Length: 116
Picture 1 (cartoon, helix red, strand yellow):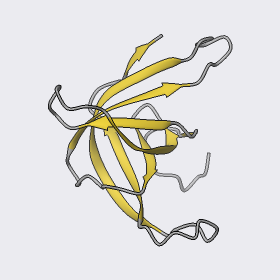
Picture 2 (cartoon, rainbow, N blue to C red):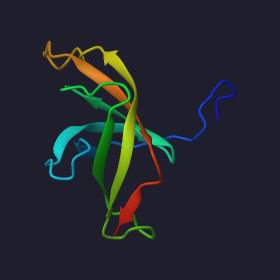
Picture 3 (spheres, rainbow, N blue to C red):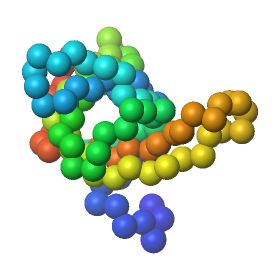
Picture 4 (cartoon, rainbow, N blue to C red):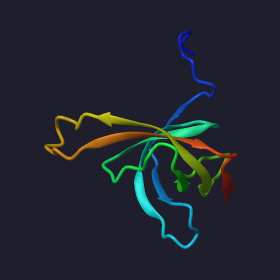
């Protein structure tokens, strides 16, 4: 681990599509973005928007791909989170898009539920 790293939780680099909704159970899940890393404390994702606000509560759901010996058929994680930070990101030079991109840090309010 980097001696200058100040994070409380170790990060696992992984790209997984994240679905999200606000506080109301009746709201449908909508695509939010793609994770760049996940830890026991939260996750970081990239999105083209719309962007939530810092402090917003967000219920997320993501599908973990099959992992031999752990979840042979994959698993689904769901968790209540809140938005910790929003970063403006440059558009990749190869994308040809001028659409704004953002990095969003979500903190788990409690450990995610795992559905096998």
